[in-house]
Length: 299
Image 1 (cartoon, rainbow, N blue to C red):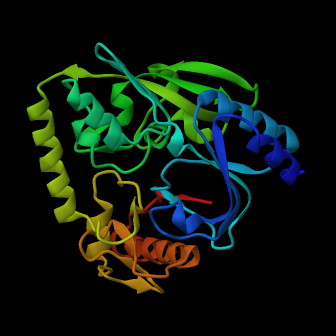
Image 2: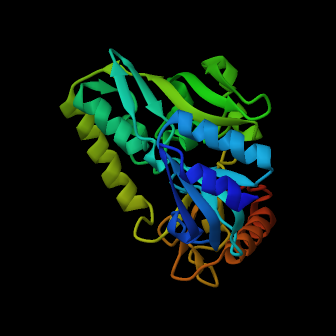
């Protein structure tokens, strides 16, 4: 059945298809086995059409942006990954930006800066797409993605219908939103921005980029912060205080630069990551009494 559906999808406009592509090439952790089919839609219409066809056939699927917060399976995925990276349209009208889900935060902040619109500068260094940032309510330096959302357009998988969610509908919280429940696929989002001077916006972008480079292990494949920030504490400090700076399982290591990150030193596996997560959680609980909860999305 999956071959029949993919044969039909390949004939549609607005998509391209790759077969047996390693997930390690699609995730920032550089981990993961072969994905049976990877579909790249370019438009909302193409993505929705694909989702309807695939769901009707009962084929397993996952929506992926840049794969920057995702731990893929070592054994691969026997279905379809819809990768949104080709959905890159940005439309700016006055102080509003309408953005497709596959646009990277870097591209959005840069495009807005060119027309003198700010408010999202603090998010510039966060890797990943708008779709992923909205779903996780990603944030940095006191700004969260949800703070700037006007509305979000989604596809309701249960009702097979496109819906518009207001800010209140999104139920944003710390690194969470209603979109994590699995029912909705984010198609696009509208952000409210603030008029500013391009030189001031870019100065902030440069300063935060330098700060990230100095404090985060960007020289190694990683998936960002592994754990959510516990109330009243910092995961990285708790891990460091537990004596785990640089601790390693296989080729996955607690970063020596920032203990809140795990880095792939070469041929790390999802199994290594999961084992290290469990070990770190146990050690931190033993030394501090704090339960660390993963921020990393694990298949």
